[in-house]
Amino acid sequence: MRSGAGRRGMGLWAAALAVYAFLYLPLLIVVVYSFNDSRLNAEWVGFTWHWYDVLLHDADMLAAAGNSLLIALVSSLTATMLGTMAGIAMHRYKMKALAFMVMSPVAMPEILLGVSLLLFFIQVLNLTLGMFSIILAHITFSIGFVAIVVRTTMAGLDESLFEAARDCGASPLETFRYITFPLILPGVIAGGLMAFTLSIDDFVITFFTAGVGVSTLPLRIYSMIKIAVTPEVNAVSTLLMLLTLALIVLASRIAPSVLRWKA
Image 1: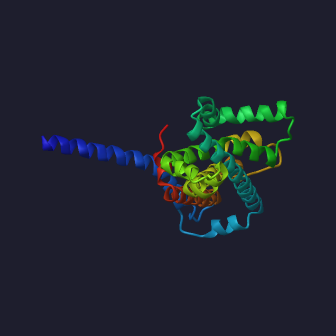
Image 2: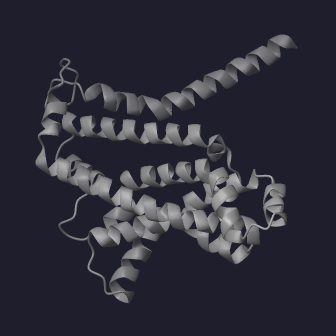
């Protein structure tokens, strides 16, 4: 009996390792080949830091990185403010319509959301596509993620704290300022970091809403790999991956419940 259970356990471990290898080996290969001393990047030639030096002197890449950082910063700050209000409202009022409106961009396929925003900007708002349209698009899909985190944080609070504040004569604004906001601040920060992470490496929605003459880091990488995958692409992908992982880890440290949220 024990031998059968042991074989099943070994089988589960083998399956788990195979899945993780399938997920993370390609990322490891990208990192390793960013140090490859070969322009063709077809085979390993030797170790070099050359491609990181090339990356730091690539004006177009640096401009695209600057655009991505600006878009991510503005959109994440705005989405954090709006998503926090939406998360609090979803927790307190239990309105299905509100939850549906906030969560729809999260559940919607990216390509559908990108096309919808493109048509809305052009046909309804008559808006010229550019930095502003990208920021609006990123705010749209980021609000739901922030609202999820804030709603989860609110669900873990003791409601008697708010009742005690009201019994002591605190106004709704004072209750929010001195009790609610300090308690949900870790969730707000975690939601903001998540929104920043999603914005800085978004490609699909940005592709549809960028217009002509505006390039972000994902769009720049895409334009480079259409010609050839040089180690410079691996280098910028490695740095972008490290930034994304660092922000995800930071968000999970600030609010551990983020990664355990369930609808």
